[in-house]
Image (cartoon, rainbow, N blue to C red; front, side, top):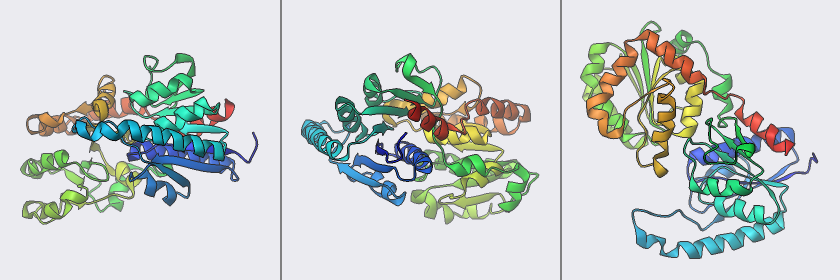
Length: 366
């Protein structure tokens, strides 16, 4: 394949769409350093900062998704869509990409739709077990669809669908270490069970409240907890005297940058059920309790979690069940070493540490 490749990328709105697109672009760039990339995103969304930070150019569209909560906001949607399609048409005619890759989000619909209609080869990467409507539509004309879950033929053409996993950060694949060593590096007792609680970069109010309601239970258990609160709740929780009195058991953190070290140190992990988080957790292979975010599009986090529950690779507690079931379900895992080993083994079956490389291999074959 020629080295002066031109690749159009589109994906955004959330980190779950942006970071796979960046990871795929970086893998192609490794192989073809002279390749030229252009991302298409949605104005005022996080991709407009994250993509340039990763060293790539991006064009923004004035587009948004359908707002189910405020129907009046949708009046301008057809107008925005037409303008976005026209802008994409101009961008593609000027850039002349060899192929286009979409990873979901508002902007990827117009970008891949116009690309395919202009005869540009298109590829779709779907992160979730329940695909978004946009990706299902775009898959009809795509050369290939890359999924993170098996048995997706109900949504995508079977002959074009490849179960290769989600691209994840290289550090998660390369930097995991032995559990006791990781605990020592984090100043923990290597002989005592450690629970890692993560709610995403913004944190999870539901998971934070679950811990607030069970501080006495945690104290009685003697278990260690690293609790990533997110920015919103950190200050209030950090000043809470009941938490301060448990400093020997709890490490409170607003944000965790070295996820590989923290995954390594954990015996049990509590997390939301975003697609990229699950892909990383599968590589870490620790016993897992998922609390899906119930307001994700089409409730896809619950679908992601249920796919793992069916294989005995995780336990799940819904938001509405937290008061009744959080602690008892967590203790079911913590107090049963055989269950933890079984869950860990089953979760690793979902691990795809070479996903990015395999996706790019398949793209370059087409």
